[in-house]
Amino acid sequence: MHTTVTIVYDNTTRDPALLADWGFACVVASPEKTVLFDTGANATILQRNMDYLEIDPKTIDAVFISHAHWDHSGGLAPFVERFPVEVYVPRSYQPDCRDVPVHRVDNPLPISQRLFSTGEVGGMEQALVVDYGDACALIVGCSHPGVAALMESAAVFGRVGALIGGLHGFNQLSVLTGLDLVCPTHCTQHGDSIRMHYPGIYRAGGVGTTIPLPPMTGSD
Image 1 (tube, rainbow, N blue to C red):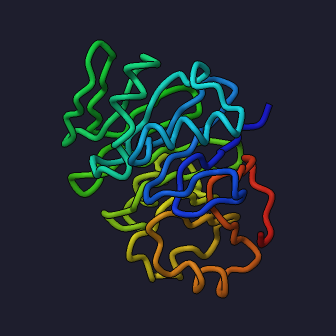
Image 2: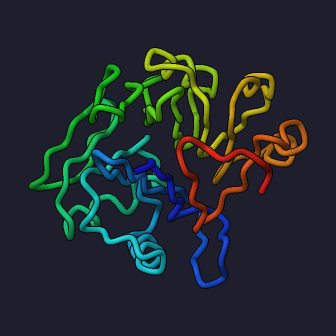
């Protein structure tokens, strides 16, 4: 069984039946554990999109929050109230979650055999590292500490081959050289430039996008 990353909350959608909203969330389904990465801003929209995509919330084993901003953590408390699972947050964030285990992460941390946190980077944000064999995928919320800093933190787990998520303010395109796939989402401001400079590895985001790991490259 391959690992898949399915975007369930984003500024755009792949299907008009899905709901777009400012924020980000994706479901990382691995053979070991299924993780909800971020929760978007609105739990109702999150649930609606998951239902349409036939992703059962009861299959989620853990929630991983990249950082405390409302557009990534707004759906957290309502989600774990209905579906109590363990939660991983950066050390600087104290979520209002009752009756569930909350791991406040400071340093790099294994979540399962192939899923890892980079640890809190830049005093505010963590990213999820997915080991898929010959390389790793780095899943990011907004990349506020900088894409290069997050990639450097992830490199302790192996070569970063795929980058998925929000690339806020990112314009140092040379950092992407050597990747097998890049899927910019949410707050990315220079997505067109990324697509133009790296057409062979670019993958469009939006709610409903599913990315297999290892990635299948090619513009979409």
